[in-house]
Amino acid sequence: MSYNNLLSNTESGITTITINRPSKLNALNQETIKELHEALKAANEDASAKVIVLTGSGEKAFVAGADISEFANFNVEQGEALAADGQRLLFDFVESLSTPVIAAVNGFALGGGLELAMACHFRVASTNAKMGLPEVSLGVIPGYGGTQRLAQLVGKGRAMEMVMTAGMIDANQALSYGLINHVKTQEELLSFCYSVASKIMRNSSVAIGAAIKAVNANFTDGVNGFDVEIKEFGNCFGTEDFAEGTTAFLEKRKADFPGR
Ligand code: COA
Image (cartoon, rainbow, N blue to C red; front, side, top):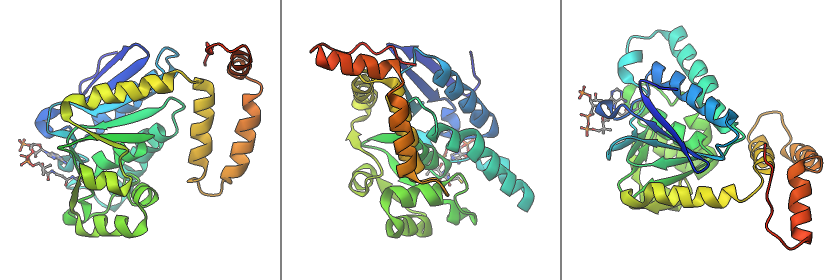
């Protein structure tokens, strides 16, 4: 499939999706959000794609936010619909995919860009990356899940300060906050993400999908994460991956998981 604002490429079990609007610092317009939905959906349905790496094109930005030029004239109803549609199509969607998604944050991740990185399952950033939620400087608040996911990842006090000041933090501060898991040079960023992806790919993709569901359950209103864990744990016992994983262990050989 070809896209106007994305590049998508699957190689050795890893799908790399690159947001490709460098002249606008990869800002998320509506078309890009829809294309990301399609590309992520396609990768999730492709049994040969075991891990997805999401990044931005160019050396300056991962994503510099939602495209401000598209919503500057919106009214209250349009603003609410913008947030609701975006959350459904992209941000909640990426978080709940059963295929692991790693954000390779290669530069500015601001507003919707940081919200997108935070909706991925975990994040690796390059040394030049700058992260922040500058929305209040525009007279609006984060609308793509930022007020919720930032507080989940860094704690309420740090999230409050980042949102209220509209400031940016650098990669080392983001690392110390637990917002990202690793800092690498820009040259090393993708190859490091691929090396983490290859560790993930040795394991059962079916079990990983179940684990994502159970971890996410802790952050879902009205859902008891422990109950989801019990259910997903039980379901694993009915899978071919479980049969293969336990048999391989007992036979002292490497598991060859059939996967999903
Ligand atoms: N929406 C729309 N266009 C954006 C954008 C966004 N969020 N972020 C950057 N762009 C565009 C700029 O308008 C500019 O386009 P132009 O060349 O047609 O004028 C181009 O991308 C390059 O950006 P520029 O501001 O010239 O780069 P810079 O290096 O001077 O500054 C930033 C980089 C990231 C600090 C600055 O672009 C910025 O503050 N962006 C907005 C961040 C933001 O508020 N995001 C939250 C949105 S809710």
